[in-house]
Image 1: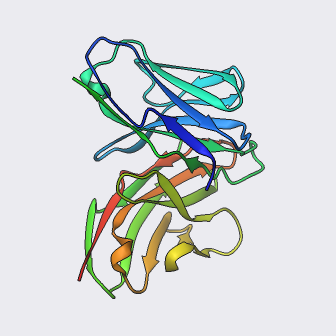
Image 2 (image 1 turned 120 degrees about the vertical axis):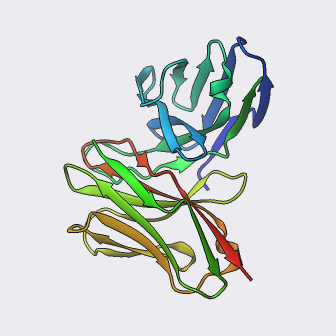
Length: 116
Length: 113
């Protein structure tokens, strides 16, 4: 199994509070991703990173920010949590190089976030 | 941009019966196609993938899928369902020029004894 951990695994917070989720990898993979999973929507990409300090938005990035100061860590921050951000969040990693590989992604165990 | 449609959000099969999960995609260029499985309270695990070459690909746990370009499909099958196949299955697509995946909405499989 790919060495990916997420913390915390479960969190309950209140509307308006900031929340940071952490993804840590031991694979030295270049690419990292944050997804949210909601019933009926599958997984939707929030943000992704293609290197240290290199990040870009996904399809559902509003209300989220990310940072990657080291290869192994990718942080997802909800600046002011809302009830619509209640979800399960997954981190994924990939070693894909553009145009040269298969974009196989490996997933972490997930973080269940509840915003009251 | 690519998109994925999984037909049927829930599939129920008897143990020993055929499992068939349907996936259709849209892509402007030749796609890379994936099936992932998610067991309860776990992350996603890769079942199989198609990149190039043979259009029938075999994966783990007895699953296989066939890429049909003319039908823009990548359906997942298993000849004989086992109780341990109960899970949620996701089809995903990416393009060779992109390193992002687009996922379908998922299909939940239940297996009846």
